[in-house]
Length: 92
Image 1 (cartoon, rainbow, N blue to C red):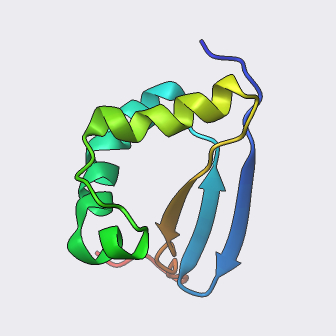
Image 2: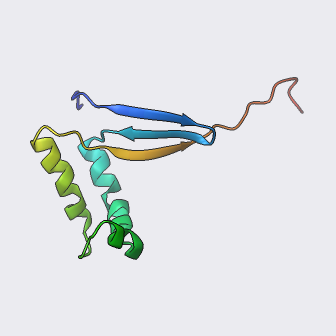
């Protein structure tokens, strides 16, 4: 079990909660393919001045570099608002 301290910042919004969290190495590895696809999207690539396609392994590298240098990499997540609970008698 990884007992290293992790940081989380949250922002409650009407449509749910935004969360920026410091991911574990396992989370980084499991989300790297999706991040690579996002980074390689033509529009996103131009916004980030990314000139070459990135592999999942290349996405993981900056997270590792940050940790090695005592940095705190963060990853965003959006959690949708939970549906409202009904009150009153249960329907049958």
